[in-house]
Length: 408
Picture (cartoon, helix red, strand yellow):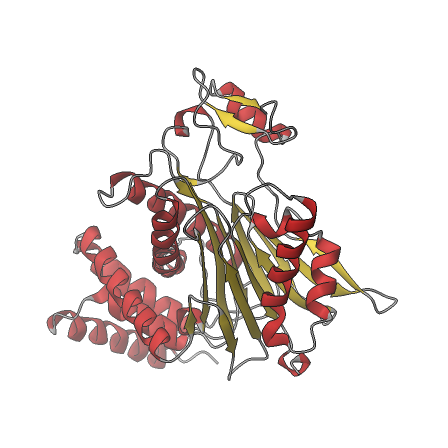
């Protein structure tokens, strides 16, 4: 039998708690963030994943009370909270931005990373691995960013910093908004479409980051930019967001026991039909030069510079009116026991290494902490063999293993 009096006391307690928080002048957005981090249970993707509803209800009440607060203040508070989380993660060796390894102590995951400078000057590749992303033990964030143009290395660095921070803030905000939805029924076992929440968060985040680059006085993003390929591993799900031509490849075991690749992202080149259509409708041009056969670029309506070999990117505002966009392609997949690892790498690797070759190289590496390094070094050798005389590109790779027991 439903206990009405108990429910009334529960509601009274929640309201009292919120009033106390407000009177104590604690920034509610920050409180909501940490409360959510510590009380969200399990993953929220798919039809089988369930989120505990009580914390969401508290989030909704707290957020409705805090509507009087200035939205900008709330966003600033949330960003500060996440920045503190990032600092703490780096201090505790949960956040990696240079070549190395991350071996999770609270999950079965193991990550190998490596980056190598090419022959075009400063290394413009950047990457990040953030274990226990969003305070959750079963969540990890990985990303590679391939800068281009005179300021590409600085843009890639800034995007690497902003994307995970803003993504967490937007994710928390969308979770809170979902709990305020009039159609949201407080029923035990009600599911939330976690992927849609992530997708909305990604779209909002990427729009904000691109605007930040346009307004930032410290970097010139008019003729410089970066790609962005990120994945979030949340429980048994992967959420993939891609902007540009870096690539994510999943390695899975086939029926006959061999390792086979499954490409999880699209290489957004200007000559892809849907990309070319958008560019030409925006008065941009898609063509390749005689000295670069097969390399299609986005060009302005008039003039021969600049030409960009990708159709989606952060920055590059000289082309944003002519079909170049910063809208990511966001997808997801559910992992199975057959899935072994996922590779994220910049295009310098994929220019000379096939998906099949990549998973074979990584799976055959005796010591998995060296997997990313071995993949990149194999790509360097292949570049010298296949592209002799062409300046080598920067190369970076992240290898995320789902079963740490595979590490030798």
